[in-house]
Length: 212
Image 1: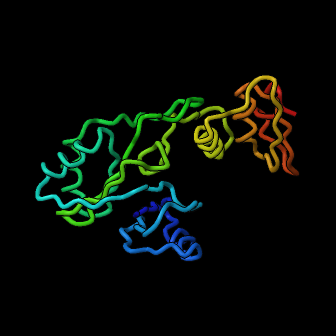
Image 2: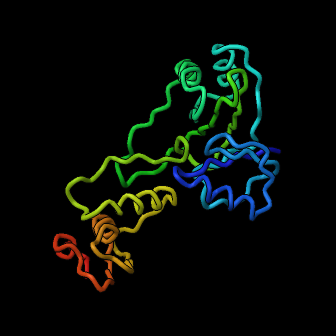
């Protein structure tokens, strides 16, 4: 059994150290992707985990695309190397919508596999991954007017991944709330929020209904 761990952007060294401490046997590193022997481990620094990976020899762009289509419909490409060839393969695969999510919304439920070119004539594929998003990266329709900072995107992502968010009749506690990005998200959902910080909230957030 082979598992691959795709590090979050900028955190490959942290993932490598995490895998070392977990005694995961890394048999290959492909830029941010670490291929290991054994079943999947919980890895905090992995943006996506590829389960039950298989390697496939492919003689051409067409045969690579056909091999992927024979396995399943939906695929996300990770192409740190062999970019041109990988893109030509991806063009021959069924289109997978990657439209930004308008929060609040559920995460995609359709199975999404991942693949990469280890060499021009060799694919690494995984039909099952732990993230429903391509390479574990979530894109949102941004809120450019309400939140006082970009921290709101972190909470949006956490809630979408959990598949659960607060609503009317619920109360939340935001510790270290200033300037109020997370408080804004919670209040916008209709829940009450107690915001705690030595520094003040952004006045627009402090004036929102349900915020104290």
